Length: 322
Ligand SMILES: Nc1ncnc2c1ncn2[C@@H]1O[C@H](COP(=O)(O)OP(=O)(O)O)[C@@H](O)[C@H]1O
Ligand SMILES: [Mg+2]
Image 1: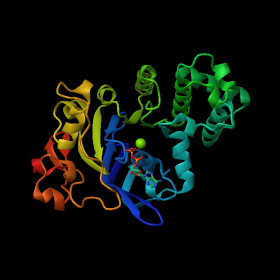
Image 2: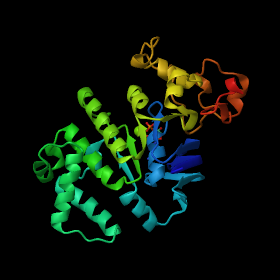
Image 3: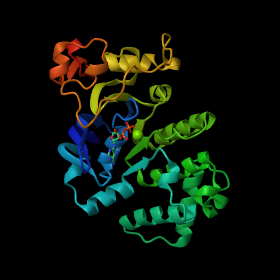
């Protein structure tokens, strides 16, 4: 087991209130496994990925829970060890490359910096020739034509698709063990989305990387992952092998999510799920999906259901299967 998360709670504090977002999340990733996380916008997917690297915003707190990565408890590690993990073991691709790239530095300066810091951790101070070789190699890896020109460019001089490739390159430098991809294609043209997802898929397969892919593109999650976790309003509603999950979804939320995605279902009409994510200031005390659930029962409203094992590789948090 490479990563195992248990009972993770994450809150965001403001002066006036506390948002209780993650509500006891569990997750696990085996070595070499490709895991998908699906769920509507606002469910806490980005919060979950940021918790793994301990890069939550200032007002984010973790009152309870455990994140075990490679035998270590991430939440208890010191800054030095965390820095090492962020530079050399776990890489992250964010949704918005413009926010992740620094506008005032060239791609060369930013890539060199990341490569240099990683090599220093390995006990080696690279020459500029080595840095250049590594940078060109990594740009070739992400199929960026004319790496020399890319290196000289500032982020705004590149197209959205090229910037995203640069960010993938940067994430890959650090992702020797685990790659986190947070909706890596959301801001791109549809035609380029497909290319970028295929590129990520190819690279993680070549490098045998463990991956967590967060994506709205359910079809891509279906094709690119081995196991899927369904997150709704800060709770894991269901976990199963990818085929099992998409072909035999058990939780009403998962069923609605899949049937409202037209390309994945013959009955889907693409109208989404009625209602909206609850207010995190005062979330429902029982199942957080209860207010929107077509099968809601009395007990759903009062007490959160536990994990119910429906078969060998399939867990659901729903009283319908109790
Ligand atoms: N820094 C923050 N302060 C307050 N609330 C936040 C902050 N970051 C995220 N949130 C809230 O947490 C909830 C989950 O957000 P997020 O993790 O981004 O969900 P997702 O990635 O699934 O769309 C949302 O309601 C969002 O508004
Ligand atoms: Mg997000």
